[in-house]
Length: 427
Image (tube, rainbow, N blue to C red; front, side, top):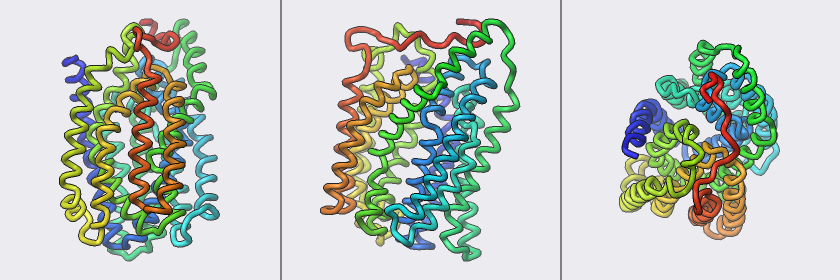
């Protein structure tokens, strides 16, 4: 266990350099936008970011994680895997961008936010060309870290220039986001495509069929549906707040929630670095009993982090956003309860995906997504952003219960169908 943890910590440390820069740049960007353009514009930007996250989810639709898993198992199949994954991501991405533009122009969005939301959809286009998922699968965490940093650092630099040049927010904010996606895509493509190699041997040609089967539309869309449900209970509240409450409520909630995601960021580095290792775990060792020590560890760390965030909520809001955002302190205190729940659910969900249990993830996420939507529809009209906080907590509890219920190996180790034979013939 200690050896595995050390290896994951080493890789997550590499990612931390880029991810830390990205999250710091993202937080500074939020502060610059809020202080330069106001709370209402920050709320509009939050809606745009939320829509963008859904469009990215549609573009990936499970192909990103499936491709990374296959590369971890079969690194010599890089060229073939990239071709299949990207053909699906680009097609789905174009459809997603069209939907996003339509939602921004005609959907339930405040009039003042329509231009930013629709423009954010266009900004997602370069993301569809990114090969950051391939860097993840082959374990190139150094370039992956730089690519992740670029996504946020370039927009911060662009926003700074736009503020000094007094560029209108409707153009400055989405254009800066698009610049970040484009820069990251260019770097990842340079790093990945330079090492592609053809598949030549008989065993490698046979492995193509298995790779093609894993990347067929059905398993990708099943995993994509699971991610869509996960996204619903993660940020549908921001969209519903935009339709049922004021942009100020959206801005306050987004300010608090972004601090929570910043707190979770360090932990996500660890689970990201662990994913390829989990994909290589032998089938005989895949079960809840083998994961139990790690669950206890992350639960303890999550409770500690959540308690500290709740205790310092007022000071944190004051330092990052100023007195104008002080009502968000109560929201941050409530949302701190999400931290230990997210620590556990992220580890369980990441493990199930790495082991090829996409259907189990969907079974666990679908009910929690429905619960989150219903709770938000009931509580936001009555309590505003505070109601959204409570809905998020309830949804996380439902998700945790669902994941525990569907996790394999309660009576012994259970794995999915035999994993794909490595393309270099090592079996």
